[in-house]
Every structure is written in structure tokens, then in C-alpha cells.
Amino acid sequence: MARTTPPMPLPVRRALRKLGADIRDARKRRRIPLELLAQRALTSHVTMIKVERGDPTVSIGVYASALFALGLVEQLGMVADRAHDEVGQDLEDERLPKRARRRSTPRKTTPDE
Image (cartoon, rainbow, N blue to C red):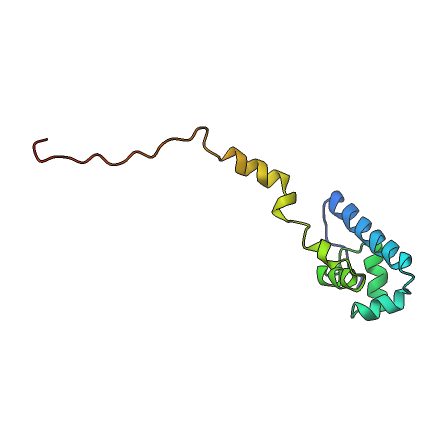
């Protein structure tokens, strides 16, 4: 029975195809044969072909191993970094108070009040 690709949004499929193509281009710039990259990424030749095609059935760990083998894994850690999360920063900014208020100190009551 043939495996089917899990349904996913078109922008996700495009991003994976771009990532795969970028991995392929980085490998070619370094003049590394596909088989050698597969060995360095601790995966099979067939799986590396799938990575370079942006196959969504390949685990993110294999993509990360390929990036590591190419010396590019540090950039993977920046994907969801808060410094690049404009939507998250905008949401945080919306939650900021509209104005700063001085904290009121509790009033001491005297016995004759």
C-alpha cells in the first residue's frame, strides 16, 4: 500500500521545498556528493534525496542533521527565536498598560477613624 503525504498548508509545502532546494544548493556549493552528505547526516541516500526534494514525510531531525553536516545547523535555532517573532512581539506590545501609574501605598488607619 502506498504512503500518502499528510495534508498540510500550501505555504508549509513551499517552505519545505525551498529548504530542500537550499540544502541541495549548499551541498553542491561545497562540492559534496549526495552519498557523502547522507553518510555525514547519518541517513540513507534515498532519504537525502527526499530531503533535497522537501519531502514532508522526512522528520525534522533528518533535516537538522543535513544542516549540521553542512555547517548550517546554528541557523535552525533562529527559526522561532523571539527576536524574529514579529507577531508575538506585537501581541506583547498590545498587552502593555496604556499608561504607567504610581503604585498606591495602603493608607494607615488610626484608631480614632
